[in-house]
Every structure is written in structure tokens, then in C-alpha cells.
View 1 (cartoon, rainbow, N blue to C red):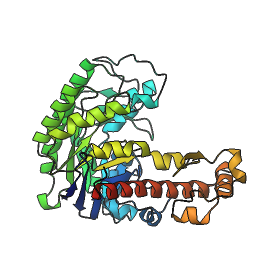
View 2 (view 1 turned 90 degrees about the vertical axis):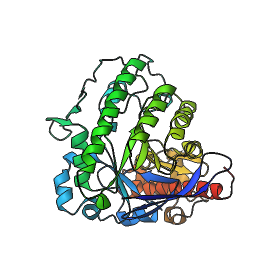
View 3 (view 1 turned 120 degrees about the vertical axis):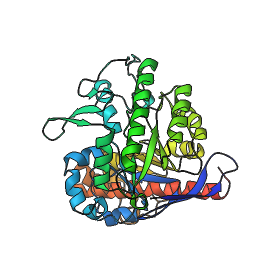
Length: 387
């Protein structure tokens, strides 16, 4: 199980400092959670990931279900031993894949509509189904990404998969909705997610002894509708989860995201940790932390790195551009990671343009270090009552 202790509350916002204790170590919150989709941070060893200051990772239960399979992970002693990661771990439930492989894939949008400009505002209506999967009240029928076989995952299956994988923190199965969805669809989806949450609680409680049980977080949904977000937060809070995830689409702008957090968080037990699922760009961090979020995950630092983009103190730079081949400055003069101390932009640009894995590895290390350092500075600001 986990223990969560709040050590300081901001006097200027809803931000707070805390310590989240897990069977595999403690996490100082607020904390950024890098995404280790297939039990790895792409291009880095676990030893390198630790040196970026990463305190906890989140892996993808849906993908691990197919490669290598949860039974193989379990027979290896659980995910920590399987990947030789000694720090805390989370797994998501597969709920995000309901969106990403469903309406997200159909319409080409993400969880915040603003990030995908030019998209049609046409709404997904009640009763509508995605092209590539089928959502029912019992669960979801997917196509295997390995061989195309039709497979089913519902709340019972999701909990069992995550228990076999063995992370410290797992999430209830939910339907992550699209920002293009109309209210009637959201109302039906929310009822479904709430029913699944009750099943997840029931399944989780009968699995193993309470002292050894993984922490289970319930997920608040409701899209960009205030009354539905409040309703969901109150309901999920009433079920006795160990912590909370705030999921689903987060509106059409950062203002919507802020509103959604402000609607949901006041109705959640403040003594329990709150995790924001899938959002955590640099420009988002102060906003979400000031709203009272304790942990949050995002693919940005690793995803951008593999495409040649570095986050720096002066903004993002694209090292695929030819001009950087003649740039003999260190990557970021204000960063003290080993990449910035040892490698010039010209060399990293060459590696990226030559599609060398080492270039991707160097940028992944730097970006993760930069993100973790940025959150550490926010923790310092909270400590000093600056935010």
C-alpha cells in the first residue's frame, strides 16, 4: 500500500508539497512521472533514468498485455524485477487506449483540442462507436496490435492484468473521452465509467491481503461539463480509492483545463494523492500544480527528444535544423546535466540528422533532467511561498 503525507500547503494557491511513500521508495510531490510505455524509457538504461532525477515511472498495461504478456511479467517476479527498476511504478488501466485507438484515432485529436488546430467541432453523438473498437457497458473490444485478434478488456480484466504486472499504483478502468464529444454521450459514458469503478474496487479487494495490495486510484471523468465533473469527483471520492486520477479530455484550451481541475479537486479527499493523466508540458506545470495536482505524466520530453527537439531555458530548439551543425555552444548553458556539460549542439545535431540512436538518447536524458529540474524548482517556490 501507499502512505501520503502533506508537508506544506501554499498560501497563494492550491499547490502543496507532500511525500508519497510506496513499497519501492518515497516520492517528493509535486512530481513529474515519465512514461515508460513498454517497461522502458526509450533509448535509456534504468541507471540513466535515475540520474535524470526521475522518482517514479508509469507503464502501459494495455501494451504490456500484448508484449510480452502480463503472465511473463508476473513469472519474472513482477514489473520491478522484470525491468530491474528499484523505484516506484504506476500502470494505467487501458482507459486511455479506449480514446487513442478509438475516437482519437478517428478524428486525429488529443485530450486538449487546442493542440490540434483546424479540427472540426462536429460532436461525437450518443450511441456512436469508433471505427476500430467497440465500447459496451461491460467493457471494450479491441484489436490486438500484435496480430489483429479481437480481444476484450473490461474492469475485471484490467485489474487482473495490472495485478499480474505488479506496479505500486494502478488505476481503475475507465472511458477516456474525446473533446469532440457531445453532452449526451458524456452522460452515458460517465455512468459506464462509474459502474466500472465500483467493479474495480470489488475485484481489487478480493485479490490479496490488504497489507500487500497495490494502491488503486479511481479516475474522475466528465469532460468539460462542470456539473458532470463535480458529480464524478464526488462519486469517485465516495468509493474509498487510495488516490485519484483526473482523466478524460480537458476541453479546448488551457483555461478549460484549469476550470476542470478547479471543479473536480475540491470534491476529492485532500489527504489522498491526485494524479493528472497525460498532461504535463513545461508551460502546463505551474497551472496544474497551483490547482492542487500532486503527480502528472506526459510523453513530451521523450517523444520530442526522439524527433530531435530539446527543451531548454530559452525554449524548444529543433536540432534537425541545418543551422545547428555550426552551433558550437553547449545544449543549454543553464543546465547542469551531463549532456549539457559535455556535448555541443553541433555534435548532437549531426547525430540526430544521421538518425543515430545516441543522439536520441542524449536528448532524452537532457529533456527528462530538464523536466524534473523544472518541477524541483516549483517545489522550491512552494516552500518559499512564491506560488
